[in-house]
Image (tube, rainbow, N blue to C red):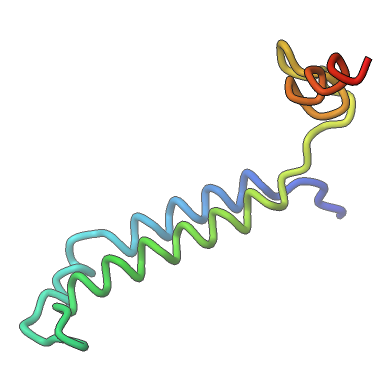
Length: 92
């Protein structure tokens, strides 16, 4: 079986990962007095989890390919958006 578009599944998996990373029982594991380079462990974990979720979301977003048959949004031209139309008008 060939899978054409797995973006939806990846986004759902990313959401579930975010919930698991930020659920209170997992946060309680990192809620200690320990410090790493002067930063409390909980803050470091929250920042790292947040950065990981953003990086994974960016990877999923890069793989989203716009549909070639779809019409461009209002005010946009086929050559790249409203800016391209303004440049074409200036060149004429």
